[in-house]
Length: 367
Image 1 (tube, rainbow, N blue to C red):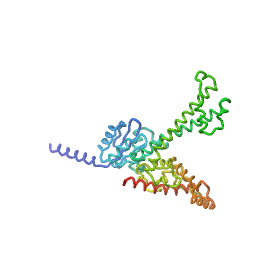
Image 2: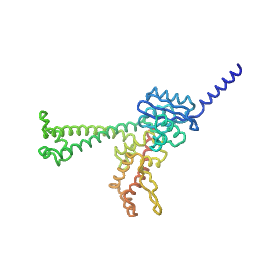
Image 3: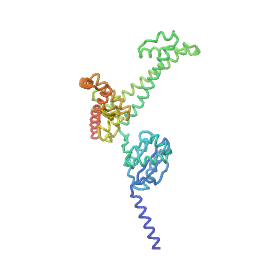
Image 4: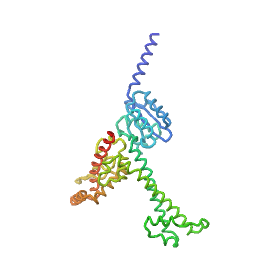
């Protein structure tokens, strides 16, 4: 009996020690399920399991991770898509969360592809420090702006496609239809197509069928124009209220400011410096030297939409800002190509954007 009691004590002590040991989780996210894995501090796999992508599933997943020990951190794939809800839950539970990139093709070819493999890889990437990015919180005004911009961007793309269809159809239309429409300004062309009369009884005739198609496309364009205008009325005050200093920068309009806010997220303090923001925006200079040539080139990585926002600011300043125009002239005389001057301008603009973002969010947090 004493021997059995001593064994029981040792088992309890072992169990308590196991619950205190630090462990690291990794999660491969999907639309309906999430696959989790947990490793110890040496990278040894302690277990893996699948959970439903529901609030109850999130709670069960975290309880399962904690059953192996003290959760030091969790690496999650797709915190901005399938893993957004899980990331919000874990952040609310004060779990140290890191964003994990999906394995590249070379790694997947050598190690294979499955949910457990991806979850274990995420856990080991978080443990080793290879994955160290802090996810966006997605719980503040910037997330609201991002959602509004998704709808606006979709409407703009649809309008562009409809306009292309309209122009193409007019170009190939029968002469009796094309004569009155070709060469008109865009707004007048759309209005004229909307006003076309359609005879539903002769849809086998090319003339009447073309008029019907033009009327339908033009009506769609007007509806999309109204949708974009409504989105702009919603976005402008939201962006101006959230980031007044950013919006006040030369060349920064509501669309550009909204994109830069969406890139930074509701917690821009995760960007440790302006250099981190430059890398995120694909505006950090990359060495491209060889032999006696000492130069840098543009970074093709990062958030390309944010890089496009910086490009818009740079173009506006090159055209209208005297200080920027003088800079371009000076650097051109020094022998720099336009693409290299643009790289330099983007990097300088990032410095201003970072300072404005930090000031805006400091004001938001103290309001």
